Figure (cartoon, rainbow, N blue to C red):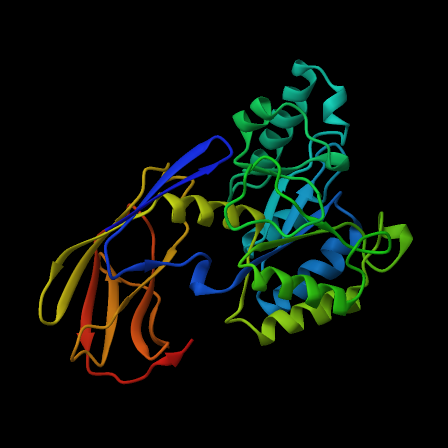
Length: 337
């Protein structure tokens, strides 16, 4: 049994994992997490970016300024397709110049308006206007995490979830070309990190600050699509959820028989918020050719993979859901990882 304690911002996690189980740093045991975040509600985000990401089946995060007349119908449609709709405050102020009451109004009211307008998900994250934070204690009352723009690849265990780094894209940013996108993604993979892109307008100065070429964006997605076993493309909030669940998870084997293994997967987090599947693997027992995995009565995503000549059953389980049952199978199909 392994105990790992991680301090991240104001959170203290304790992970408990029975040997020989392993919990993935990133979903699917990928090498990096990649999040594309868009600020200010620039028109081409809905006209170009959302359809482009839908084409590849990748989700994105749209940080909306609620007093800037967002297209709520379009945002609701985007949310229904798995994109995150999150806060960029009510009026886009410098939060550090506001008193406590004004900061609360900007943070709480924007969250509440988004939740009222987009009802199939919860607004749980925020991007600071001008990348300038206000009072962390106020922000923590309303959001799980906040995005700034320090310009570096974020760690897989952020020091402060209320100050997540992102990289500015576009004409005045650090990432301008398809090659820049690829280089930053590869850098994230090399350090097992989290690359968060900050994008405003697309293609023209009239669409928003520091416009990013939609062609470069498409080529970036093509690269990630061609390397899906390396990169996990996810919304900002889902990466936050995954990190916190991963660091708080308990994986305990409760029974091991000839053809059946029972596993309990739990954590100490709020289930109504932290319900993202966590990727887990264990070596197949001797004599098992393959396996299927259920959580309760539900067949869950699983596959046999080969890593360093060891055959594993890899599966995605939601903490605090029902017991996980791994059952021996005679199927022989497997994948190399």
